[in-house]
Amino acid sequence: MRHRKILPAIALIAFAASALATTGCASSPKSGKGKPKRVVLSTEYDDARVGRDASVDVKNELGALDNAELDAYVGAIGRKLLRGVPRKSFDYQFTVIDQEEPNAFALPGGYIFVSRGLLALANNEDEVACVLGHEIIHAAKRHAAAQQALAGAINPLAMPWNRAASMAAYGRDMERDADKGGQILCAAAGYDPMAMSTFLESLEQLQRLQKGYSRRPSFFDTHPGTKERVASNAVRAGEIRWRRDPNIGDSRAALLAQVDGLPVGQRPETGIFEGDSFLHPTLDFHIRFPDGWRQMNANQAVGAMEPRGQAVIFLMTGKGGGSAQRMAEVWAERAKEEQRAQVKDSRPVKIGHIDAWRMKLEMPGPGVRVASTVTFIPYRDATWRVTGTSRASSADKYLGRTLSTTRSFRPLTLQEKRSIKTLRLRSVQARKGENVFALSKRTGNAWSPAMTAVSNGVFVDHRFEGGEQVKIATVELFIAKMR
Image 1 (cartoon, rainbow, N blue to C red):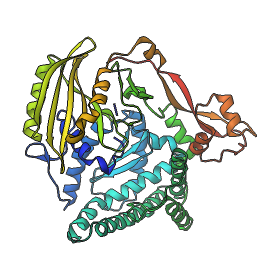
Image 2 (tube, rainbow, N blue to C red):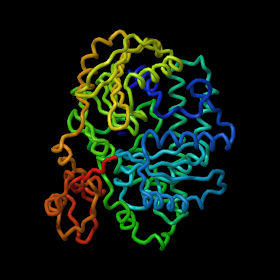
Image 3 (tube, rainbow, N blue to C red):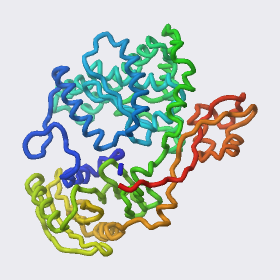
Image 4 (tube, one colour):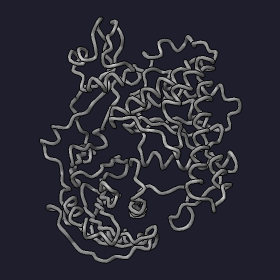
């Protein structure tokens, strides 16, 4: 089980989801009864401590890919770039996370994460190096601490949009600084600084393909527009003097050798959505969420959100099986103590042939009361919780969908297990004069011609000279290893 960006309209829902997940990952660091403690990033020691704690939360929430070879490969590139950092204050760590979207970020203290989706999109080792260089600069220059200091310095009585605009402008300057510094680190390590521009161009093309349009920059954006970054990084790359490190060899071949077989798209090991149904072959369960709701698959929860963000239904698992009633009562006591929850109803229910327990609760949220219906289901040596959460005033409106989702929880059928497949990235050799369409047909490529072109940094009508290594996706049968 694997959150995507949450709409501001459901801030109370996100709060409730976090509050109800009392057996899930915790905010870190903490003080008192489960309340996050604000840490002032005054020193590098603070950065290292906060980053270390937050990195545990990242791995719990997003999930590490647990590919030792890929982690070692990314780490080797990162350590090579670190030679260009004049003063290394942190023990940098590089981790590949199990996220299909292209993403990279740095936590304070030098904890740097890149997603498998980013490695799949990158076209050569130079591009990976530029992304890592960008994140190293964020950590080395303590940009998180600088933003915190700015937020504290802005007049709290200023108009909200003035505060937001000031923070966004400062954030854009930091991104430009990280782009520039990352290119300089790459050039010093023998990587092509132009790769910063080419990767961002591929990223923009992918977003355009997925959304059907290019997003227009906003005054409140914390990042400069992608077109601006592509252009400015390309100009800067032409001004930076650098020499290719001969030990790198063929930069594209080096990367493709590492990502061959990498899962792309949904990963069956963490469950997959097929329409409204979510199937988890290794945990052996099926659950169906409401039609048309926005789906989420995080490392510790899977769920769906009402399109306007007015309600959310999610599934989590807690350790230990046994009596559903006992597990519900223990959980409710923690919710009462830590979140001031009030139990409105508590009763036994049947989910298929399973003896389960259901509770209805209310608790204070940010400005409104939040209502949740939570069903505890003992299954395969664990107790699963299906939770439906909304404003208390609209709880009845979404109760039916919560109960329908809960009743859909069951083991997978044999047919469902046999039908699950996985997409994996493979590298094939192009033939002379072949275009993307012909290559896809010959190799059984599962990607569309447009996706294949974006993933390889070419146009759809591009004709290959012959001998080039081209990324494609192949459909392969998934054999589940039951937990």
